[in-house]
Image 1 (cartoon, one colour):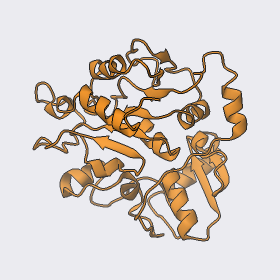
Image 2: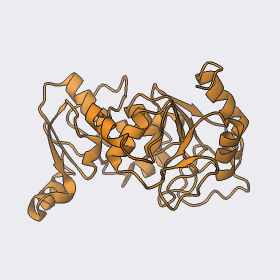
Image 3: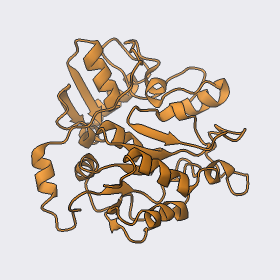
Image 4: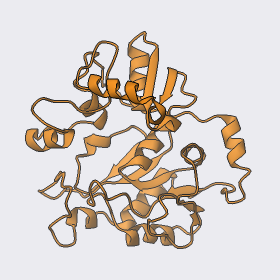
Length: 283
């Protein structure tokens, strides 16, 4: 949604108000005139806003897919066979039309926030890279590339100071600094801002890396089309040629043994991508 704020600011002379359940991603954004925590909106106003969501106007739009024919963006891309960037899918119904020529999210971090984070005793010192081991599976389990493959990346590049991010219930990796579940969202933004690069799956971390302008290697399975989360700063890596059932958009576990779309991307391939990204020299 931060990408939409940037596009509105660039393309229209609007005073932008943002109502969101995740205000941490919009703090210090110079394009936001008013930031409202959606979790603290009075009950009556909350009800009114929900009633307005299906009826976008020239000065009001909900970042949420709306179509009379399809109940969700997922059903739309499945039925139409026309994948698009998530930002476009979530705003295509708006009365205010956007130019989607360049979609770039933006999250802002202050110097004071960085200095405060560095006071933590567990904060990484010197150069570091971020890595995850797996992602959330409540929506779909089919984005996960495999814990063992992420571990192989760490093992193959021992000279890098790896910092693991994610939730506390995600599998811990060996030989990494573990910050799973130990940061606020704003601290997580600082952690990303100061990292050399990120290795992740498509999800919060790839979008956050793009929003902070940090190079990222993003491993894609065959769950979605690469255009769904395409950003200039993110190198999306997937099996080539891709399996015929991709993009599957399945929210249930992949029925094919071994999930070949995930297995088709090797840890060695990602290691080589990192070396190339770093100009052949790791830090």
